[in-house]
Amino acid sequence: MSDLNKLGLAEARDALRNGDTTSVELTQACLTAIEGADALNAYVHKTPEIALERAAAADARLKEGEAPAMCGLPIGVKDLFCTQGVDSQAASNILQGFKPEYESTVTQNLKDAGAVMLGKLNMDEFAMGSSNESSAYGAAVNPWKREGDDTQLTPGGSSGGSAAAVAADLCLAATGTDTGGSIRQPAAFTGTVGIKPTYGRCSRWGIVSYASSLDQAGPMTKSVRDAAIMLEAMAGHDAKDSTSADLAVPNFEALLTGDIRGKKVGIPREYRVDGMPDSVERLWNEGAEMLKAAGAEVVDISLPHTEYALPAYYVIAPAEASSNLARYDGVRYGQRSALDAGDGITEMYEKSRAAGFGPEVQRRIMIGTYVLSAGFYDAYYNRARKVRSLIKKDFEDAFAAGVDVILAPATPSAAFGLGEKASADPVEMYLMDIFTVTLNLAGLPGVALPVGTNSQGLPMGLQMIGKPWEEGDLLNTAYALEQSVGFVAKPQKWW
Amino acid sequence: MSIDQTTAAKVAKLARIKVEDDALPALATEFNNILGFIEQLNEVDVEGVEPMTSVTPQRLKRRVDEVTDGNQQEKVLANAPDAREGFFAVPKVVE
Image 1 (cartoon, rainbow over the protein chains, first blue to last red):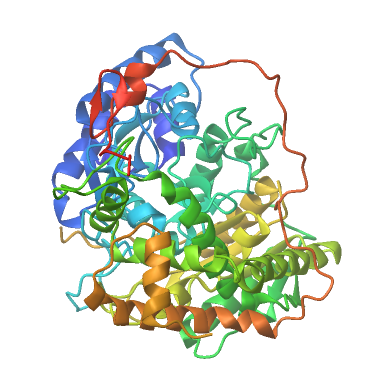
Image 2: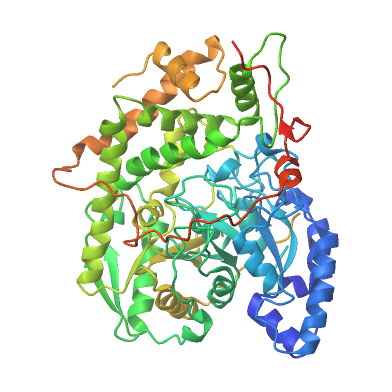
């Protein structure tokens, strides 16, 4: 078989089970592709020895028969996941050289299932960003380019390296995490599929924390079926994460029937924002028409507090970050700055944190510190948490009225050029998350999938939002849309 | 709400992040931009709304109060920038 790295998880699994290929061959194909793709800056710590060792073990297991679906499948891992003995830096200088003595639950689950880790993937520092430009490793680059234009584009963020690696076939699939859109926005920018599961579906243990009440891990893949397969392997209850849900994990793949007759799909009118490009509007309408043609009922709905999701997010996420990132103190792990004579422990904290954190991380820590400080806690933090309750209630009301799935754009535009949004105002970048952040606040699952290309040939994605714990139903609706769309475009290789 | 340089310096201090004096005006401006954006929240009627404490309505799980872990001194210290004789080492703390 040729071009093994271009396979998806399902095809590769079937090929392995049929004996058409081996995990070592699949892994070699990916490692070769990775070696030729440094221009994308997707992999920041390559682990070829670990990969080949696990691939050989997977082949032995496959030979014995009855191996799990992920057995032998090579994947990339976002740098945010702690992986035992392998650099896990969260794309931050403050964690330079950090090699965890333990493995995150999600990567352990994947490892136990026989998945092969190819290496660690680029991201925005501590998952704070929407373009992968705030990374200690420098930006990852989108394999897609505008037609007739050589500008390098962002793969999105924060899981930008994961998205670039999947789109460029540098792995069969990758792990991502999503706090305000960090799986779905990069998926939309790269023509790939990404699902953020219900809060609590995947254990957060061993994933470097950003905003604990919002963070969730999920798969980034080449198809909806692949997302179903990989999510099942990642998910499950974990006693080490007290917010992990003690619920059975369904066989998501078995729920992909493509039959969505009678399903009610909600179109939230508040997502039709000012200045939305025609291409986004058109894509959204086309998606709704396709679902209708597949037998779903499409209804207009209202989520009245949508416009307040972003400001609420930019209180709650920095507040939690300021607390979570207090642990980087130059004492227990990571970098400690050189000290001057007479410097005490406070100077050590201040200098290490100033040198180790990038500008966006420092900004969010300080905003979080401010909104939690005495005198402002009620005005900012408590008010944001009340608005969060209202945002969640908007969704509950929609679902109570019979809506099964909500269809919305994933991003307000296609991928933009690296450096194009480097202007002074950080708020401009925050607006990238306008369609994705609401469901993190509500804890709901959401999937982004490619639905078309714009006039410049760049992929465009739509997003579907499901009921809590109904990832199976959500993925099935996404599967039906994927079947109708038949998106097959791939980036032209230039790297 | 407007943040001046003194407030910006105070926030930096609370966050234990060293900010040079000449960087404070730009920092204060950035804070004001972001807080201006956040202040949209004042338009929302939150009368009688409970602040969210947990996004999923589930009780936190409890476990038996017993030792489940330990005796890993070497592993705990393995990534420390400065570890000596089984301890994390830090600059002198005594005033």
